[in-house]
Image (tube, rainbow, N blue to C red; front, top):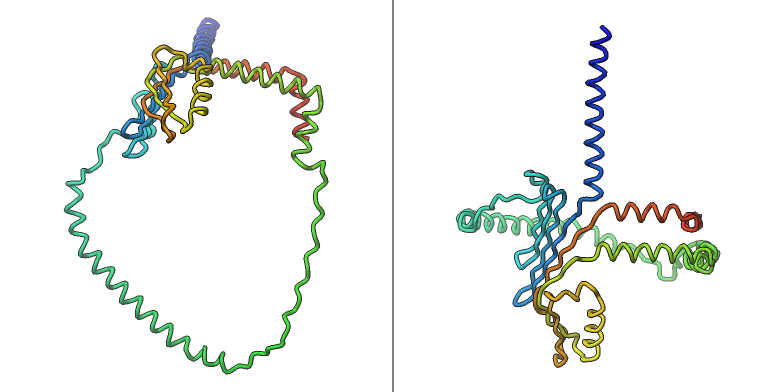
Length: 282
């Protein structure tokens, strides 16, 4: 009897251990497997843009495209389609004969509605005429004054302490809070660096309509690491008087969830930030 009980407990322990290991592996995959994204845009004769996102080795994927035909979206998990489908709609040639058959019926229905509307209008005018005659017969006093409405008491304006601008200024003037805000800013900059695209490629030609603005914009673009990729060529048109952007660009990168978790833990552990959150809520 004890041997059977121990065997059952052993099986239950093995099952629980397998489930625990599976959950740990799943948690690590969620945190460390990157979410890959691919964004592209083109503007030559016509504008078109799209994106692709994949996760867990393409087990979960999404995509979208915008062009002259409109916006299309698709989200898939494994082989199941959550948003969008691949079924083709009926062609215009199949729908055309049905539309031609419905045209005469629609015209007949429209004419019947117009006639019915005209009848109802004449009936309404016949009913209104005696009522209007009675109204004209009644004497309307000329010098009758309308009763004055009671003026609503003016609401007291909220004190300056309840003003949002005052609260923000009060928080910013505190040196203790400035350190917390700087910490949040530094963490946000680190996150942006890790989330930034890994590579970019394409050919772009742009103009802002004036040489000075075009040159300033080109200088700012040259400082962004993403645009330093050798496969991305950006040119500026200093002679054009009209602003425009032509060419194509493709941006690829990846995001890992654990960087957001670590950043959140770092911010929550800071006493100054917790104090700042309490002040904002108060």
